[in-house]
Image (cartoon, rainbow, N blue to C red; front, side, top):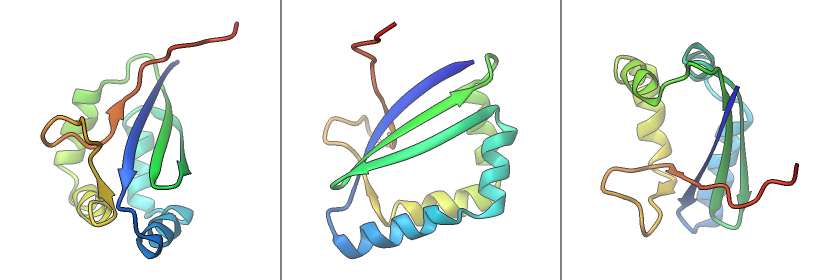
Length: 110
């Protein structure tokens, strides 16, 4: 199993943040299926103020390229992603078009 962590900001607007959280209390069934079908086994999103932190655990053969190709062919995923951009904003240091920015682990207590 592999683990990935990402960060992203929401627009700093309390009403938009509340609406974003509401969408994530009951994601569309097609989105859940797409996540699982890509090899993602577990996903959590945490929030502090308008900063989001995503933890994702995947199968060993998970590929971001494969996931991106699957998403590009899935109209419902594209609809969801376009809707979520209503609430999200890239981190100040994100590359053009980059949404969730990968985080580097700097500590691990074993």
